[in-house]
Length: 127
Image (tube, rainbow, N blue to C red; front, side, top):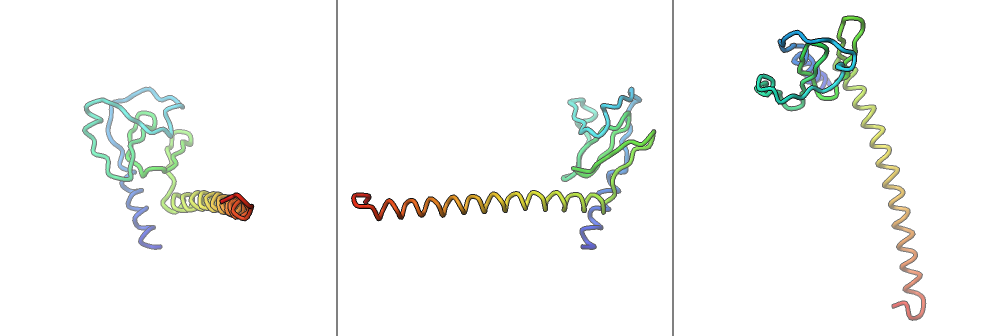
């Protein structure tokens, strides 16, 4: 568990290094969105696996994929590695429970189909 925390912490630190860019207008819709562009300067940026380029106002940052970023006044706050890990585990647990429920439904349907096939085979002329 410590090793995972160190990995998330290292990814978090890498994400704190902002990339320099010319000043642009700040708008509230530009926050917490993944930024993609065909600009040659931005295309030259090498983004490591598991990371993404985010634009927050006039600042571009490389952050771990799925990291939540929020703005409070003029401060941009990224969630910490412990929050990121806890949120991801919680979301994965919810998806896993959904998959288990779907699997149980499929198993029930399969048992029903098996019973229907057995009943059809038992009837005269059903073979």
